[in-house]
Length: 84
Image 1 (cartoon, rainbow, N blue to C red):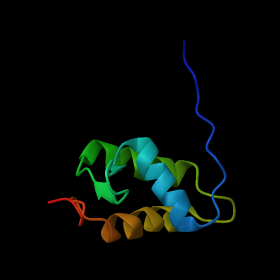
Image 2: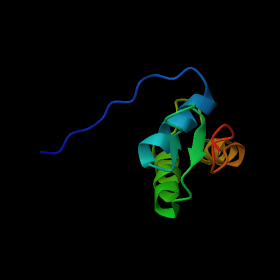
Image 3: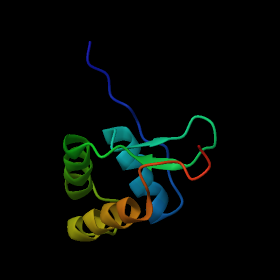
């Protein structure tokens, strides 16, 4: 059976972009420290960009939504700064 996930409302554009990236599987949270980590998964990134362009937040253009995804990805590393 096909189900859909309803996104929780977010307060900021950055929060929206993080939610889209998490949903697509492009980023994950460190289970020990809570830092976001880039999974470096090209297909997941593509899904996040497609979602951003096809379903941007109200009042935002598809290009601006894709830019928000890029901004978040540029600010996240692939390792947790607190993990050894």
